[in-house]
Amino acid sequence: MFQFSSLLALVLLARLVAAGPCDLYASGGTPCVAAHSTTRALFSAYTGSLYQVKRGSDGATTNIAPLSAGGVANAAAQDSFCASTTCLITTIFDQTGRSNHLTQAPPGGFNGPDTGGFDNLAAADGAPVTLNGQKAYGVFISPGTGYRNDKTNGIAVGDAAQGMYAVLDGTHFNNGCCFDYGNAETSAHDTGNGHMEAIYFGTETTWGTGSGSGPWIMADLENGLFSGGTTGLNSADPTQTSRFITAVVKGEPGMWAIRGANAASGALSTFYSGARPNVAGYNPMHKEGAIILGIGGDNSNSAQGTFYEGVMTSGYPTDATENSVQANVVAAKYATTSLVSGPAIAVGSAVSFRVTTPGFDTRFIAHTGATVNTQVVTSSSTTALKQSASWTVVAGLGNSQCVSFESRDTANSYIRHVNFALMVNANDGTKQFHEDATFCPKAGLNGQGNSIRAWGYPTRSFRHFNDVLFIASNGGVDTFDATASYNDDISFVVGAAFA
Image (cartoon, rainbow, N blue to C red):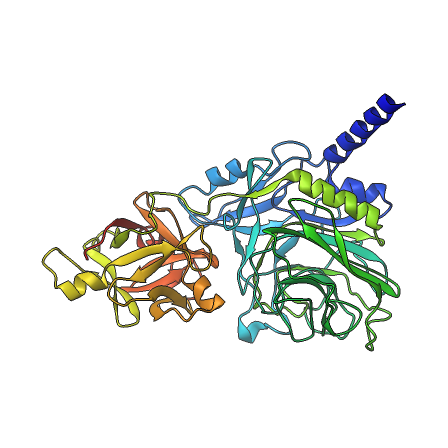
């Protein structure tokens, strides 16, 4: 009997590992009606496209599929396609066959045509990770970036039951509204209380909070981020401290729940399970069935976060089903990998950055007061000029995997970006400053030196334009985003400092 029981346990474990999250939901009677991931297949038999990338050099696109049925994304195919240029994620495909794909979010009530138009697309290589040792890429959402589908198939509407989970980066967040994944308005406008039911992650405190300083897993139900049955504090909803988190929100008539866990180990905990909020409009709910990622229902797009995988279900999943999904996520073994590449820029070193654009390659990154610019610097230049073109490399203030650059002539002042212009400002100790002053070097796109990418905006890198420095994208609304000579203008040879 003992041997039979042990064998049965092994068989059940093997089935759990082989199954995908959506296989587990289906076996629990609550099938996936949307399944999105840029890192892996969410059905054991899925071999179709996970996402599409668009190349900056020529506008060509390609679809990235798993390496095998039910497997991890083919990151090598993306790396090959995007070599020596930039790539954006244009589509995150729905793996259920219902065509609930996510594409560039259109203007909405918060961010309409007169205030910015369509949202930005995410960098294809902005969030590298490994799953069981195999490289893949998540979706790094910077403020202003978002995905949406307003014409869906099978997503819950009205007060119908639904569940959802997402695997997120527990260290990438802010207090903006709203980093969401889930059910939203089909009009991209705020149509009232209870017209959304989505996972929220961040530190927004206007409506509800959990314990500690955050970030928290909450539910965006429209006109309210709820951590429990009422607005305000739910002390049972803890601050999340794990690098990878699993976030769960589910709802049915009169009832809803929030659950969460470390996505790399352990089991789900329930942070709230009970009645709908006791405010008009939330019981019954009025869900509309659109799907959003990285934005609020009305296209509120000031939030940031990173998404790896997530699904939406038909019906209210049992805790047991969700526990099996969590075990599957843990078995995927999400882990971090390097954010930098190219010639090493060592922490503790003193460096200067030489321009590589033909005709400008005697110029170096320097500063005049707060303005970061390029100037011609030689061994015979003044001491003051040499110092202004020299920088000390320190561990990234906002992410220690990357670096920050301290001015050699202005102590405790660093290169940072403000409205995409580079400035030298004193470190004020804030989370915003630290993130704005953190950069992740990669191999220079023109084959020389390094391109210096902004950690918080991985579509943007140091670029000299009319002798002034910006973080620029490869094509965009600003003049400094021009595609002409982009690869040259963002590539710098990093050498020993002048001073």
